[in-house]
Amino acid sequence: MTGKRHNPHFRKLLVGYDGSTESEKAVEVALSLAECVDASVLVFAVARPPEPSTSVELEAVLDDAKEHFEEGFKKIREKAKEHEIGLQTATAVGHPAEQIIHRAEADGIDLIILGRRGRSMISRMMLGSVSERTLRYAHCPVMVVH
Amino acid sequence: MENVWVLASVWVGLALIATLVAIWFKISTALSEIVVGTVAQLIIGAFFVHGELGAKSPWVTFLAGTGAIVLTFLAGAELDPQIFRMKWKEATVVGLVGFFGPFLGCTAIAHFVLHWTVRSSWLAGVALSTTSVAVVYAVMLELGFNVTDFGKAVLAACFINDLGTVIALGLIFSPFTIKTLIFVGTSVIVFAILPFLTPRFFKLYGGRVSELEAKYLLFLLFAMGGLAVWSGSEAVLPAYIIGMVLAGTVGKDHVLIRRLRTLTFGLLTPFYFIRAGSFVSIPVLVAAPLIFVTLFFAKMLSKIIPLFPTVKTFKYQREEGLYFTLMMSTGLTFGTISALFGLNHGVIDQAQYSHLVATVIGSAVIPTMIANAWFMPRHLLVSKKGKDAALAQPVHSSQVEVGV
Image (tube, rainbow over all chains, first blue to last red; front, side, top):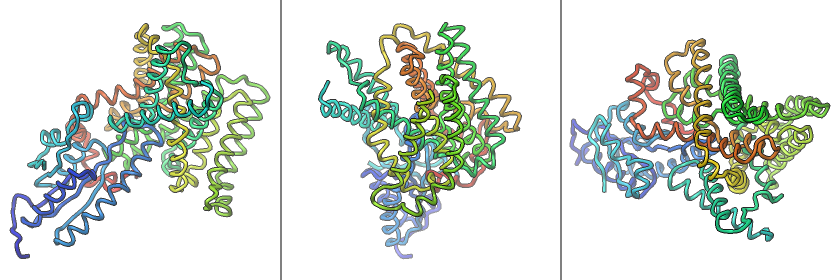
C-alpha cells in the first residue's frame, strides 16, 4: 500500500470511545496513525453501570449504551473502510480504565489512545480520571489526545 | 398543598433534580431519588411550619405503589428460566441460605441487641435479607463470569434469595385466615396458567398502538395486588412471581419491556423512591448512629457466615470471595419496599424506618465505595490471587455483547 510504513512497535492500536467529541478526536488520531504505520485499530467502548446497580435500570442502561455505541461504530467503520484500515469494534461493561487495560493486555495492544475529558474536580474525585488510571496500569504506551 | 398540579410539579421537579444528580455522579437513579426525597423533606420541614411534600396524598400513594409493583414485576422478568432450570439445585440452596442467614441474623440482632419488638425485628430481618441481583450481574459482566457455571448459579441464587424476601414480606405480617388460603390458591392457579395464556393472547391481539400488552399486564398486577392486599398480604409478592413466570415469554419481548421501562422510570418509580426517601428522618439518624452501624454489620456477617460453607459444598472455591462480597449488597428496591410496608402497616415507627433505609442504602453503597477507593484493575487482583477464571477466557462475551 502506498504511503504506508510498517512499524514493528505499533501494530495494534486500541482507541477508547464513548461518543464524546474528545473520543471522536482520539479516533481520528488513531485512524490517521494507523494509516501511516499500517496498524490495525480496535475501537473500544465501555458501558459503565450506575453505582450501586439496581434491577431493571442496569439492563436499561446497557441496552441504551449498546445502541448508542453501535451508532458511532457505524460511522467509524465507514471511515476506516475508506482509508483501508483494519478495524475492529467492541463493547464492554464496567469501569472504563479497568476494561481498557484488560482488553489491551488480552489482545496484545501496542498503543492505547484516549481522549482527554475535561471533568470537574468533583467528578474526578468521584469517578477518577480514566486516562490517569490507564496510564498507571497499562502494559503499553498510552497517548492522551487533547 | 391542595393544588394537585403544583404538587405534581414539585414532585416531578424533584425527580428531574434526582436524575441530573444521578447523571453527574454516575449513581443509580433510585439512590439519587431516595436521597433527594430525604433532603427535600428536611428542607421543607425546616423552613415551613407543618411543611410536607404531600407524600401521603392518595394520588402520590397510588403512583408510588404502582411504581413499586411494576418495578418488582420487571425485576422478576429479568430471570433467565434456562439458567434456572440448569442450576436449580445450587441456586435454591445458595439462595435460601443467602436469604435465611440475614433474615434470622438481623431479626435476632434487632430484637436482642436493639430491643425492637418481635414484629419490628422480623421486619428488619426481611428488609435486610434481600440481595442486589443487579450488583451481582454488573460485576459478573465486568469479569466475564456471567458465562461460567458458577456465575450462572449465583445469579439464579440471587433470584431465589429475593423470592424468599418477597414471600416473607407477603406472608409473615398477614393474619392467616381463609382469605390467605383464597389468595394462595388463586395465585397458584393464575401463576400456572399465565405462561400458556399470555403469549397466545398477545399473539392474537397484541402488536397494536392501543398497547394491549401493557394494559393486560397492569390489569393482572393490579388484580393480583388487590387480592394480596385484601388477604392482608403485600402487592409486590404476586408482582415478582408474575414477573418470574412470564420471564421466558414476556421477559424476552424487548420492545414491550422497553415500553414498560419508559413508563416506570419516566413516571412511576420517581414517586416511589422520592416518597420512600421523604419518610427518612436525618435528625433521627444523627442522634443514634450506632443503630445503623449495628444493623449494617449484622447484615454483612449474617450473610457471609452461612454462605461461606454452603458455597464450598458445591466445590466452587475459586471465585467465592468475590461473590460473598457481592451478595452482601442489599437491593434498594426490595429493601425499601419492605421498610415502607412496615411503616405503612405500623410494624415499625419512623425512627426504625429511617435506620432500616439508611442500612439498606449503606449496604448497597459502602461495598461499592470501598471497591472504588482501593481501585485497582480487578482482573489483576483476581489473577494475583490465582483466580484467573476471567483472564482464562480469550475474549469476554460481555466485551462483545453488552447486556448478555
